[in-house]
Length: 247
Image 1: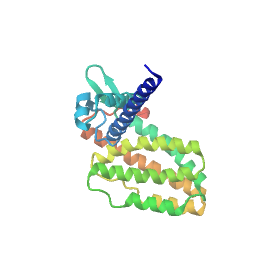
Image 2: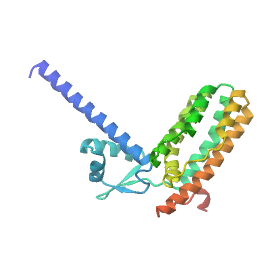
Image 3: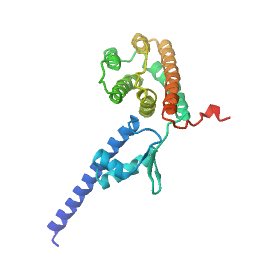
């Protein structure tokens, strides 16, 4: 075999591996989005043939996706019975909001006087704007707009680690909101907290911005917990106890 032939063979192998990795990434993003948006419900059992039929995926790309989803904790393998989607529990709500209530007021304090008011006002209008009629898309639309609003404040804080941490928490929030609100077909009510935040942040009032951010997260925590519990009962799914109630 000549060097030219070997080089062509190696290039073809690299191209094949790259194509497989790309298709695996696409399959992962697709299934993850369905799980996070609760179009595949927490606790549901799924199999490879079901996912292949539903999404038109090849076996190799599907298995790459399932491996990544398992590593990320979104699904768990059940030997000879497929996979089970990770449940959402009261403990999840407690933990995510405990971190949000600690970090978002800090981000608001640090961002006071440093935000782009026009950007925040555009994002706030997007949170309240006309949304598609389909419930799942409504939640997707709201959460993306809401996430962008809060992440803009975190970015303005200038603390990159705080921004990265809140970004991960907001990603986890998507599944809580989709389960709590999307399953029941209702939209979260954020009242006028965003407008107040914009006013205080733009005026450079760090104390007031911190206070409103904390109240906003605490209020949303209570609403989300109520809706998540109601949705799990509606789905006849067991609700794991929160850390506070485990005695």
